[in-house]
Every structure is written in structure tokens, then in C-alpha cells.
Image (cartoon, rainbow, N blue to C red; front, side, top):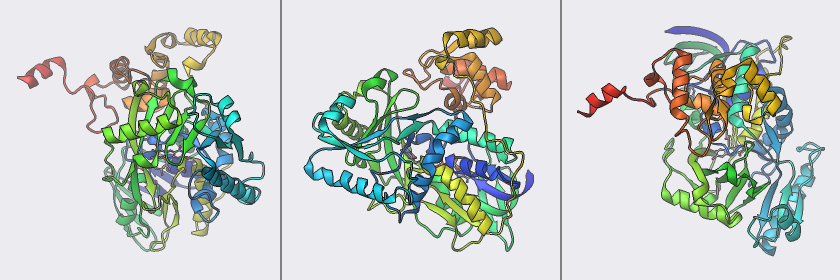
Length: 495
Ligand SMILES: Cc1cc2nc3c(=O)[nH]c(=O)nc-3n(C[C@H](O)[C@H](O)[C@H](O)COP(=O)(O)OP(=O)(O)OC[C@H]3O[C@@H](n4cnc5c(N)ncnc54)[C@H](O)[C@@H]3O)c2cc1C
């Protein structure tokens, strides 16, 4: 068992912890990021709808909310961040649909508020919100339900890939000096006068500051140190992904308060879900879906875009949005030093927390400085990362060149997403240790067959590259072994 000493311990390698780690790496600081999973970005971040928006559709679109101020500060940072880290980012715009004259009050209120905040809380160069009428809506989105009479248009809304962004931020933080540990679960925390003693499954860590960015588990971690001066309610939210062939059905994210949203993703699929009717204060960490959730979400999606069909769904899942108060659907964040334990900082980044993450990183620098940490610039800091090749996006000439350099790029392993052996090997070189690690880096298993064809082939490549037997390859670490037995063992087990 190892014993580590570090100045700042960040618990949780989701987008929140990753953004904080990367921001701290701009400074000369001894920081360590620990993640209990086998990869980064596999907590709430993995379940996000991947939409970067100002939150004009949520109750918290008001300057009193810390969450909104972080989202507004984070939004303009997102595109440059994705550019630095070579992560896809696409501005799609959003249309919040209006059904009748009474429904006009909401867009009018949001436009008034936006104009009041622009230049104050919202950067002055942000594109304005506007109302578009029925004819414009029809011409922009002919497949949206004809009953809607117009929409609140936010041209700033964008999509990206939050898991790739998280992994890239962690890689960048590591390159700039932050220590990162996977498969390291914090089990106990004891607070001394000047430092914390933290027990993990891999040994102990002594640190002066703790940043608790444990997502769905943020309360539990805070409780370990008696720093839980807040209450959070993880609320189950259902979502589904449609086959890429439906990708052209709509161009913008379309949404309504009652029916959730249907949106393109940055990879060309459509997503739907997170309507209020498909959110439940369920048993914490229970990620099961059921027919009622699925049927309700589909009905809501069809209210927005009637051609959304059950036969085109290729995957569905629930994630937990962390609410502060379920009754009024309040997703305020909890970012700040615990009122009870000095130097213990809770960072539950709320909804839409992906958008808020870059600003949370910046705010954390201010918080730590106020808490007495001296932060001097890291002269070696480089903000850049280069993404691995995405074969399916290359021109024919680029494909030929890549295959000439490495013939494994000529071997397509995932037919649905056109992922090559070269990409899978590169993903493993960059840290993937599991099927999900490969899938979230280069997409084998994200297509129509959901890994039915490529799963065994990716398992083989993982086993070969990691030098382990195939039956030791897991979906996501722990007991999630894909091949439980060798053929002979299976026969024996059945006897
Ligand atoms: C259905 C859904 C849709 C969403 N859509 C959007 C959207 O479109 N746009 C948007 O901006 N936001 C969206 N959000 C919100 C956004 O996804 C979250 O705000 C964000 O991902 C939270 O990131 P996080 O880093 O705080 O938590 P997480 O991603 O959960 O990261 C926390 C990490 O801590 C680790 N951890 C937990 N306990 C321990 C421990 N004891 N020791 C070590 N590690 C530990 C976990 O394994 C996890 O990896 C959505 C959320 C959901 C659920």
C-alpha cells in the first residue's frame, strides 16, 4: 500500500474534477486527482446530453443563482477550450418551442432577462436570444410538430463530447504536472488541524486541501469529513440515442418545458429525453431503466418531433442530475469551502454542469488562493493536446496516407462507426484499459449493433495490446468481465 503526500487532492475524475485539475496545472502546485473508476468521465459526465447552453429554459436563469453565473462564465470558454484540446464542438442553436399565446410569456421573460444580463453577467458579445415565428420555425425545422406557433431561439447553443473533453483535460493536466490515479477509491477522510488523512483502496494520502468533485457521491464524501453542510437529491433522468440514419431529422436542439428535448449530437446521432415526466427521485445510483420511463420519454419526444420512432432507438440509459430541492426542480450547484471544515471544498457543479465546468476550474483557483494556497504561474504550462485520428472523418487522401504509415488503419473493426484497428490500438496507447475506455475514445460499439459485431474483436485487440488473457478484459473494470469462461470452462460450469 502506498503513502502519498500532496498539497491539493481532487476527488473525482468527471468533467468537474478534470476542469479543476487542468486549471490548477497552470500553476506550480503539487496536486493529485484520484478517480475510483478505471477511466475518467464515466460518472454523471458520461450520461450528459452533451449540450452547451446558457440554461434559458431552466428556472435558474437568474443572476442570483451561482450555477447560472458559472454557466454564463463557462459558455464562452468552451469553444476555445475544445480548440486547444482538439475536441469536436459544433454550434447548433436551440429552439424552445411555444404552443400557444399563453406560452409566449416565457420567451418574452427570457429575452427581457437576457438583455438585462448581457454585458453584466453574460458576456456582451453573446448572440442575442430572439423569438422566431411559425413560418421561420417551419422553414428551419420542417419535421417539428406543426402545432407549435414559434420558438425562443438561442443561437449560442452547441454540442461537444464531454467524455473526450474530460479525458483530454486530464491528459493535459497530467502533462503539465498534476498527478492522476485511476482505480483509487476514497474510503475514509479524517480532518486534522492542518491537514487531511485520506484512506483509499490503494493506500493513504496526506493532503492540505481537498476538492470534493465526486458527482453523484459528493454528499457521501463530504459526510466522511463532516463537511456535508448541504443536501442534494440525485434525480434519475432517462435518455435515448437514435441511429445515425435519423441524424438529419432536425438541425437544432428542440425542446419544451413539458417534453424535454430532441437534439443532434456532435457525432451525428439524435438524442432525446430529460423531460420532467421522465425524472424520478429514485434509489440513489440505481441506473435501471423501465418501460414506463421509456414510453413516456418516447411520447414526449414524438410531441416535439413526430417522426422519432422506437425502432430507431439504439441505446437508452438513465443518469442522475443532482438537484438541491426536488419539489421545485432546483439544480443550484454547491461550489465552495465547507462552512464546517476549513480547506474542504465541495464542487457539485449542477445542471448544466458541463457548460459550467471551465468556469468552476477558474473559480477554484480563487477559492484556493483565498484559503491560503500560494499559486505561482507554471512557466512550462502548455494548453494544447492533439486528438487521435478519427478515420471516418478523414478525406480519401488522408486515409491513404494513414494506412501507408500504419496498415492497421486499413482494417475496419467497427462497421457501424467505421473504426479501425489503428484507432483502437492508439486509444489503448493513450490509456484505455477496458471496452468502455476504447468505446468512449474512438466509438466502437456506439453504432446500430452496439458492439454485437466489434465487441469480441475489440476484446481480442485489448488482450493482445495489454498482454492479458481475453477473459480478463472487462467492460469497465471490477467484475464487469465480458468473457466469463474459456469454452472448456464454460462446458464444465454447465455440468
Ligand atoms: C441525464 C443528464 C443529462 C445532462 N445533460 C447535460 C447537458 O446537456 N449539458 C450540461 O452542461 N450538463 C448536463 N448534465 C449535467 C452534467 O452532466 C453534470 O453536471 C456533470 O457531468 C457533473 O460532473 P461531475 O464531474 O461533477 O460528476 P461526475 O461526472 O459524476 O464525476 C464524479 C467522479 O467522481 C468519482 N468518484 C465518486 N466517488 C468517489 C470516491 N469515493 N473516490 C474516488 N472517486 C470517486 C466518480 O467515479 C466519478 O467519475 C446532464 C446530466 C444528466 C444526468
